[in-house]
Image 1 (cartoon, rainbow, N blue to C red):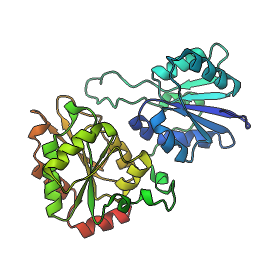
Image 2 (image 1 turned 60 degrees about the vertical axis):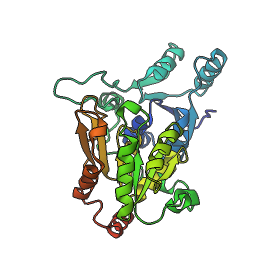
Image 3 (image 1 turned 90 degrees about the horizontal axis):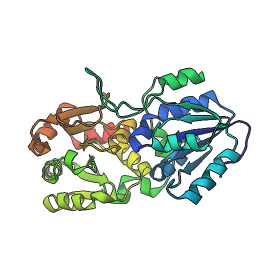
Length: 326
């Protein structure tokens, strides 16, 4: 699984899509610090495809089920035989900690990110993601200062038909709905349906994406708004990046996919409960709407006005030109 080629470097990123997107500048920093090394990434199964498309890794592997004793033992032996010189743990989660312990006293030089805070300090917002500054300082790596940029994902499948909106029956200007998996933090089906109806009357096609677990939610929205293009369970992360790059805007609540959309230049609205807000997006691309009385109180017409105030829906033609300019 892991071969030898000059210096071997292992990067661990086993937490989440949001964590993977946030770490994209760190991936580049590690590659620049070790330009001639063979760099391997260890990640979770859902992220392997987008990871393989990135320009930063020579090979990508998925972490096995550690509850399977035989699989765990075989995997650890493979890691040891690869003779990694350095490990960058960018996750600092339980899976990474188990790997650290399993590698034993003769493990490689191990640089570990600062774990995400369990709760925010007074006056601060918890990002829910690990920090890399101290780790890079200790490793002598120049810490990145840029925001995540996944535009490389757009050419991962050059000329592939399934990377284009038309593959899904999408034509003209469209907006992306990115509902989260957590029902308690999700904007209502009637809210998304109301916005879809407004969009359809003004020349914008409403497109809903998400995991296959959101299929029934997509059905609920489509029942109320037949104009909806329901792509739940039908797009991978590379296809979603391509759709977000072409979309006029997005509307979401607590979905990790927002991070991916923003990383390719898509702008939009995030709807969250004031009592349990989602991770803060420090970006000019996102306007956050909060509600103290439940997300059902957030009116679709108000969301539409917010998108208009952001300059995202002046006309469908303008929206198409804006997306093409990214």
